[in-house]
Length: 71
Image 1 (cartoon, rainbow, N blue to C red):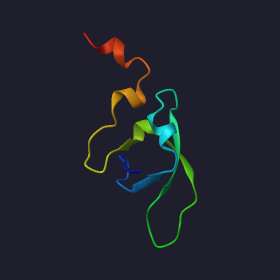
Image 2 (cartoon, rainbow, N blue to C red):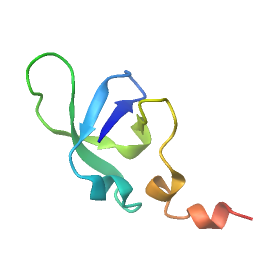
Image 3 (cartoon, rainbow, N blue to C red):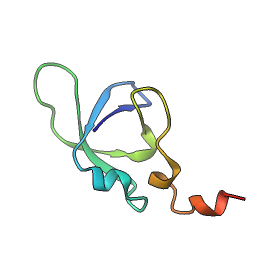
């Protein structure tokens, strides 16, 4: 899945969607999609990633206590 790094606006290809949607995983493995050569995989904090449209990731993917905030 392609996401964007909020710090530098570069596109990141997240390798494992299970890590992305697991709210207890705070980092995901991905590669930057810049240049013509394949980049080396690296870890990204999920809080640093957003959708390409600029929207935040869902709370149920990033906050283990997301249900406690509902009232």
